[in-house]
Length: 170
Image (cartoon, rainbow, N blue to C red; front, side, top):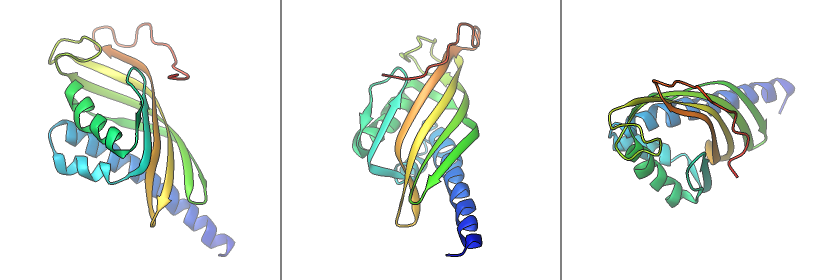
């Protein structure tokens, strides 16, 4: 492969990972919280079999079945509406594997029994960073690890007062 072909492949890989995050994660997760099961299945199709999900305040989910359950029951059980906004990504690609860091701002409407004890129908804000790992399988980029370092999970009436940077979940 020539130098130009390698550079073009790198740019295409960057865009494929951005699309993975923007479409399969943000759009599809937000739609699945609203009850669109087809979008949920689209997202799950982009998880590797050995995926790990580690979100601040939640148990680690290991393996596709456990992570699928978290996205199918855990997230929609906590939120009735959300709008993920990811930005400022730094993506490093090494052949068929990659790592990225994304910042997240996510306004949300919470369900009764959410871990923040926000009243049902109450609104809040989730913010922090995603640290992710990917693998290319059969030409498609998939997640192997999603770590959500959530600095802020608060109702809107207190915004991000007292927020502190979360550097590690464990």
